[in-house]
Image 1: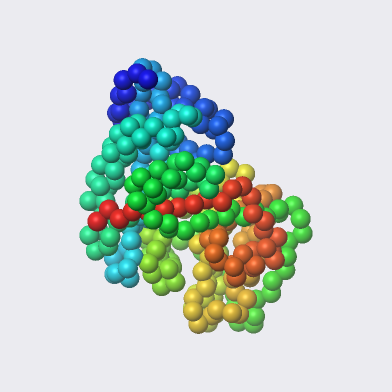
Image 2 (image 1 turned 135 degrees about the horizontal axis):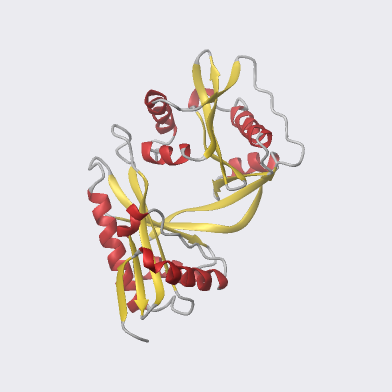
Length: 305
């Protein structure tokens, strides 16, 4: 083992990054982040032995809690830390790289509104046992939640769901700042401790075919779902129904509208992500033709402040 140099990612590191990526992906089903735009490279740390990149760690903001929401809400940062295959148990390498990533995470957290706590999270596939144990056993990370990715085949006939009289589906582009503020207020009413936040919503709005599909009754929004396209798949996200309108078939109606919208735009499959412990949601999704694909994702967290 040679001397290890750890520094921020640079443009000239692209071939070395590609080499690490190919080796890691060839080793199995591994969650590996790409480095993103240049503005994020100060949060991307690379470990080199000579010209070979033997590990990479990076961190980014996942969501920022809007002001005035539940005091139990948290800002969330996520990190990704991967080594060359066979080096997953190299504590010296992992600790040195994690120290740099943690420093970047604390700098990011210091810029977030102090009204809320900040948690640092990591997500991996369940099969990445050694990487997961590093975070839980060595660093003391706690379970956050587990996720399944579900997929629906849009080439098959779509299910039918009729909304009750007085309930009207509407497409909402969220094109104005006032629209976005209204949407986020409603969304945080349903998810007070993990509100989406303006920054995350802007990321979603940057995708092709983005729209919110909402159901209204007498001018009031009863529920919503966000949809867009990524590569050749339709994505369904942030499904919610407000308390006074629950148990009226609105969630099913929203999902059918979302599937129809994506199919009408030429897509052949739709994906969504669900918490593994949400049995009622899983039953609903399966009744609409969604099936689990890929491996379960496990997420852990630690508090930064």
